[in-house]
Image 1 (cartoon, helix red, strand yellow):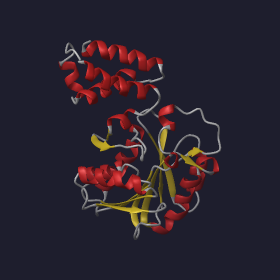
Image 2 (tube, one colour):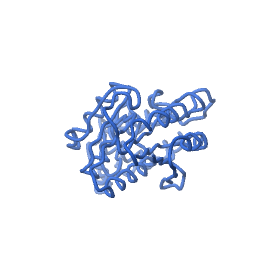
Image 3 (cartoon, helix red, strand yellow):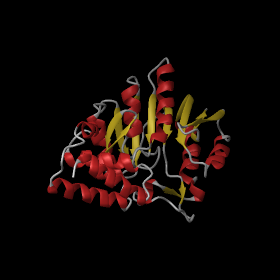
Image 4 (cartoon, helix red, strand yellow):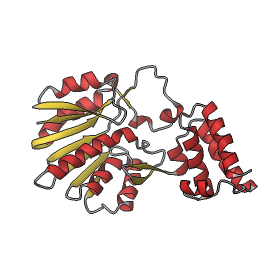
Length: 278
């Protein structure tokens, strides 16, 4: 069977098993199995696959059909034009989160002085590393309660050569981070741990501690908003990713103790990031 034939069959199979990006999934997995760039598949559409190549690829497709995220299967994911290592110890970077980073970079570039930035619940480090990469004057402190996640973060910090400006600490929210900050960023768990969810298998496959929160999903975001005023410099800001399920509660919490707030929409037009300023 040729590459083009295998891709068609695999995309059809994955679509029947619930993938809403079946063709892309099939291509990413085949490129990984063949150790090629995805672009190279198009240059070799008529190339026949041998049995060992087919066996390796079928295994990846079968795991994807059961709901494993493609990023875990191939070991990396693009975010903000950068390539990040991803393992089952961290959330898969989501393109919707890019609006948070874009706003952070905008604030950093508009500032007259270098910003001191915190990334709370850093996971793969995609927020911290991207801010440091695109806003070279920033210095970033990143925290996570998971030491396993921070090992992944550290490798991504090294991969993108920002180790001199991205500092990692293990602990809860802002607690392990030193001093005050101009900007605090966070993509915290916001799925209600007590609710009966009909979540996609690829979401459930990600670490529960990075997905679920108490108090209807808003517990960690609310706690950050309560703790942040004491850790913000005058005029400092918070950028927190939110979900429609916690949006009203988060905005209400932001209205207490802060000078103002606004919402930023993601590429799909959804209200995604809550910006709060002191």
